[in-house]
Length: 236
Image (cartoon, rainbow, N blue to C red; front, side, top):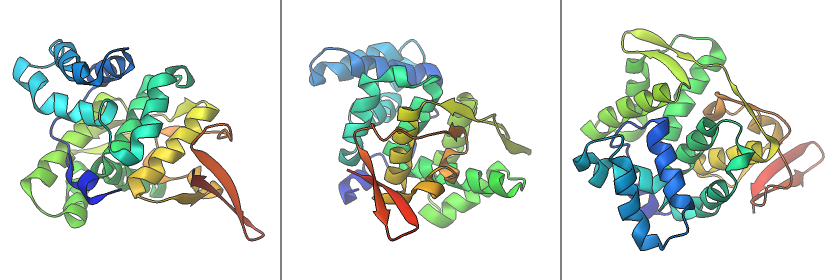
């Protein structure tokens, strides 16, 4: 990921929800000039947020996910726009798109996933403190972490928060092409090119997805054999 992509939309500026993200996906799928889609997104978002937010921070946040993703994520986001039928539950698609386009959110997923894997209790303050360790102690980091947690709650990927422990929701079943797409999204949020095929099935960023039988037909990943005992997924 380029330095420009890292700086652009680095932190989450608003909490998101399934209807807001669905609006972005629908506009991205329209057969309309790119320059018109920004206005169409603003109109669509007015159903869910204030006119001011629809024209500013909410539009900016959703546009980064579905209309103007970072260059590294353009192909895989376009694939999801064109192939929504591969996602049994659109929350899978939106969560993966957030991972691919907002590494900051990816770090929140990772902190939560590691805690869940260890069976340890974690609270919003723990996630915030870890975000500060990773990204610095700015107001944008603190508020962005809160908005990320709220977004995951609105997508029903987690419950709890505040003074209550955060708990993972039940993992969602994922179709094979979507499983490969999610592995791609995890690689992008890590800024990596490859991942061991075994490790990919248990990556903490994807604690909310039951990855079964990733498809070799997904166009932007391929398997490579490294040595005698290691196979990796590599971004094409």
